[in-house]
Length: 208
Length: 183
Image (cartoon, rainbow over all chains, first blue to last red; front, side):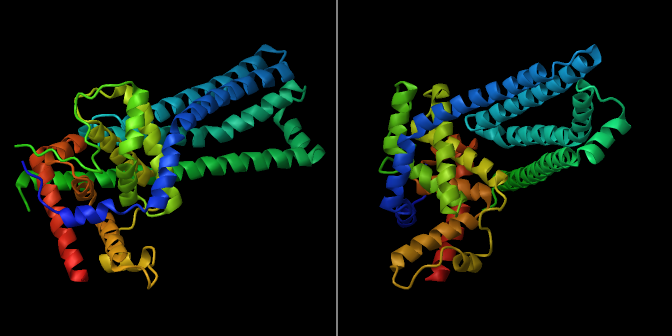
């Protein structure tokens, strides 16, 4: 089958990138191997920092009673699970680029749905998890009872209470922003798939 | 008969080409960065974001080359990654690529100074028009403009060569009409 001739448009198209920008992009390309290695090293570093932080926190607070130890272990397990799920989603997103072209939209939408689901879980569990963390931290310091903890944070040490509140609001806002962006991403992918399917229907019908 | 087109955009690599992933990547850098840049150009108008997109495409190519099975040309493999990464980029981006009516697209996109040549204006016009095409037509016409055969376009997009030809024809008609109306 012959390609329909559009040589003038093709020439025009292939002149789109000016030499200066092309030189910048060539330089970028020659750096890619190093960039890939740097990103791989950063991923490992972040994993070590994340897991190290959990171990460090447990070592610092040295929870003595079993319920508090179990509480910290539960929070640590949730964090590790979220991290593991997130890594799988990122790996899935990376694999999309080399997947089969005819299943691309289906796989991309599925991956986006899973990511949105995880984001919704994080958004929902962060408030109780943070409150639970505060209770555990207080209990590890010998302060028990919700009224005692509330008095400690908002009366005796208001700076500490404000810091925790700001910390909580900041991360919850980040989670909400991420959720909204992912929802919009999913909608865009679904719209693009519909566009693709409409074109496919035109191909099948032989519509010019 | 299948037409195989080679040239400055295609790089001329053939199916069955061998080499380590590293050597193949060097070939990509030597022969296909222009094509990658132009594919990114069709999806992202902002120069800084476009550079990011090109970097993401190149990273995906680097990671994907160990899975290159040599049952298609390197050019087709790279183009497939470029278009999929571009779609992911558009889906993630806060704003969609310019898809305003054609006259608006010309006004809003990179206003050209008076002294810029008419050829540059034509190039900008073509760029703006390509961005306004429906996604499936845009994918096909970009590869068509990159001198891919219909078979290669079909392989890259996961459609038949016949469907690729139809999409290119629809996109070409839209482009020609818009370009003629402008001049």
